[in-house]
Length: 258
Image (tube, rainbow, N blue to C red; front, top):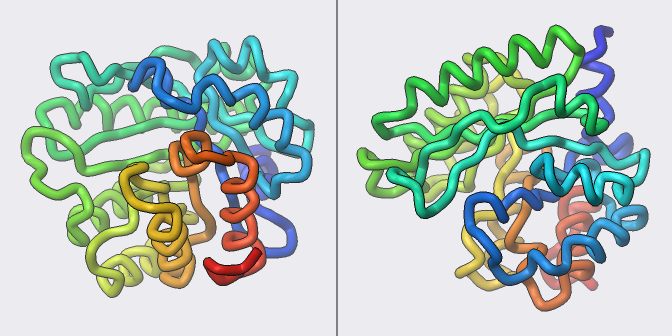
């Protein structure tokens, strides 16, 4: 077992075999949105949360990385963009593998948007980062979304299936995608993928029950966990929301379970 596989194994719960990844990297893209002021208290609650990994941009990793317990994986986000950019779906490398390692990264994360005029460069970035990360034995989590000038509905099942396939084809160790509008197509794409697929939380606009149901549907379709951000840190009680996702990811709990 090489270093990448050893570290990858740590991202999944020993009993359930699933991963709950907490994404707290939204500030670079969205600005000072609601919930970002709670990041420190959320990180302090990680020891009993059921979370296997937390995604931070490098600045927050510098200041708050010490709050991430040793048994919770620190995942450094390597690329970023802002919603004010032209175009807003662009992502550029802002952190190197060596810097991520200096910050204590157990894994790294990349965000790729397809269906736009910049997808070729983002795909090249993913390929090159994956190669470099693997040279150091570091797993790569790729969040792949269909988002851009050519996309009408990023939850279209064929587009989400293509996002999964990009994860399978370009070398990352985990791929995270949204739950689509057709579960059958999604299930087939997940089953054909040689790496673990995580389902993302999606927009906060849906109610909590809807977001949890999407996660449960993703797990039922073969996903090996979930990667959740706003549907935890922007809820009224982020700690409670984190625990709800943990029960679904690791205990196969019903949505109504306390």
